[in-house]
Amino acid sequence: MQNDKRNYIGNDYKLEIFTITDFLTNDECNLISSLIKQNHHQSLVAGTKSENYSNARTSNTSNLSETHDIIKQVNQKISDELNILKNYSEPIQGQLYETGQEYKYHNDYFWGEDVDKYCNISGQRTYTCMIYLNENFEGGETDFWYLGIKIKPKTGKAVFWKNSEGLGNENKGSLHAGSPVVSGEKMIITKWFREKQYVI
Image 1 (cartoon, rainbow, N blue to C red):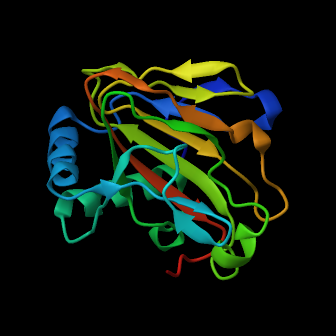
Image 2: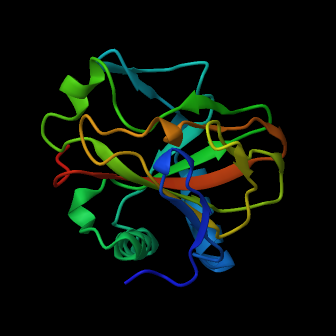
């Protein structure tokens, strides 16, 4: 059932996108942030049938496992919000952006030659959920190019958007960027859903 706390922020390009304030508590955000700090590495970008480091994405990434109870709980909460089975989703990733770091404009769905590598089994990415874990920094807004909106980070705030209906039905309106962090450090988690059950 649709959450009555959803705030739909735009429908240009027929993009389904909404936020939920206080989706996670401060304590939950702090706990997840501590997990990210314990183990992270330079972020990779999928492209040309491989994963590489790129100047377009300068953050650090942490792969968060359900061996931690908090990750298991958040995984389920996100899946319940979208009414999609959890096994249709990729594992949660944590991202740490330090001062000056960013993720330039990109789509979360796969396109071109990457479709063959990343979509043959589990299909295209359909939904994205991104949650801000802190707000004590400057910059770092999530900028949706075609919608002309920038979402300001707030601790515990979740942003959900629909990337595609499936292969061949991608929505270019989902193009977005993580603006550079001007000062401090930004922490988020991201979760992507697929058309079919996710198989690594």
